[in-house]
Image (cartoon, rainbow, N blue to C red):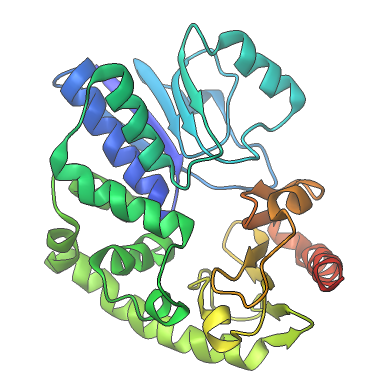
Length: 318
């Protein structure tokens, strides 16, 4: 029995969701099952291909819905979970006959999966409580301060840096398999994980200087453009640490497979955020949560991404 698990790649909550879900399936549904993991990224091009659903059972966790008939499990907690109204109707037609679950009220998909599997299957692996706890903190950005989020003293926060910034998906799959049975402190102490973490930590410190140099705070909004730097990922809390007076941030970045506009809100803002950022991003083909969203473009469309970022920043400045 092979189970294919498609998850939100380079995301702590996505990785933790894949780890928790696969552990649940092995413990309660298919003992001895083998698991294959596929990382998914929000791209401007087609998200799903039929070849992705090659398992005896196929699951998507912490990512958008697919109408593929081979999909048997789906968990998501994003407001923008459906690519189209037709997908939403398909979900309504099939949710009772398959294991499909969505609840945008949840801060993390990992906690959502943990609650659903406990309620419906009586499943509660106590050794994964710490994983569930930290996935919820990380995805809700429920840190005490921006300084805490940027300095990353906890094992989960160090792992977040590794997961978000490492190249490719194979390393993330290795961490997912560790998450299924190991404590977070044990994972970050692993020699291989440390070899990944240390250069990324140095890069993180350099990114702080880049954002300080390129960032501009005006009328409650930070905007910056790092598309011209070797900065495929960065800690999203750095802008709020550097510019604590701001409520929102809008940035443009360039990865190997896309140009991206990121829109966020300051968890420690002096003024309470009032805009639904997922709704704003949906107008441009993106999505997310009310407090954080993103829009993906083809890599060649970086100028279009910059124009959209300017429009959103102007709207947030009001």
